[in-house]
Length: 429
Image (cartoon, rainbow, N blue to C red; front, side, top):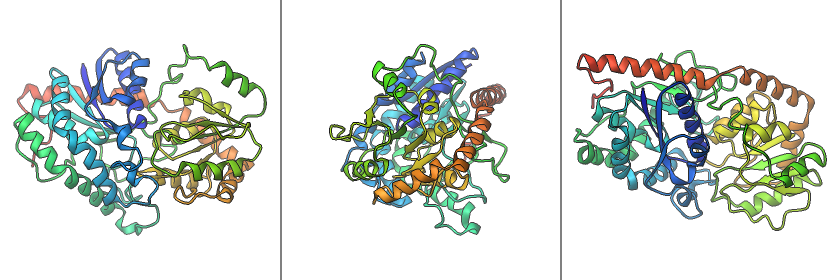
């Protein structure tokens, strides 16, 4: 079978899909990944055929740009939806042309993040299955509120409605550009309503998020999308990193991935105060943080596989992105979470409820005292034991195998529908 996978977002959006493509290829299928140019290095390292989509997500995250403006500002769902839509809407027509060309002859389109509405439209045009892929739980449920809303602000009886509200808010922000591209690129009629009936696979661990009892059958919770060795067979750490790790006790890891646009000077001052003389690793990521003034107990690193690094640290200080949240917990490590935007507060709350992290540190007003309390909580024996238990449970899951099996079933069902003249995509506008 042939699968075309399209996503648009940060490295945390692209990396799991690169792993999924690799798993599909290892199962004997063809797979191609389309994503932002700056996020494709994981696909290339895994030998996954890939191509860039138009746009520049890293620039959009820079201070003052559309998405950078909402990072760390406690912006609500509406502001975030508008910021995301401003990125997607500028490239929707180009994305639809690029994905449509790549998907010719495919058995299914797998779509994620900002490319979701494009992927749904292309699949409808080509009359092949459209299969969602996400690391964020967006299927409506009574068990928790939309992850794009701050935890605790929605009364429990409104949980399910909050998902529908946020999902429709996002659709309305994307609708005009999506419909224009549907007409111009795919010769499809405009849609009035959001898609709700297509299958969606979640690269999420049931240890972190048990499958809600009221989710429909087409919502699959697979487990984290990462290979057991995450491509580590041919990877070796830089000599300086290996020497630092060997020189003393396990360090604290500090890294905020693709996040940018926050007050990194204030954040780093607070972290340095809280960490004191303890050993620490710092990954600047996309933050643009100035590392020249870091004390000598901090060692600055480049992009390093989490599967290799996190088992060698004592705890993980991070932004609460789904990928880092899963990787830290999978390694059996407690977290200190500093959420800035999107679903990060949701994952921070999940880790707190599970007992492997203190309450989140406010990324908009971080203090040394807040970080110190969170680090002390992470160092407690009970916290570390709970993290080890969760990590062991996550390592029992095989998210990629589960996802590949589901994709094979869904694509085969799509072939059967096409054979009798039925379009696999729900095309009711």
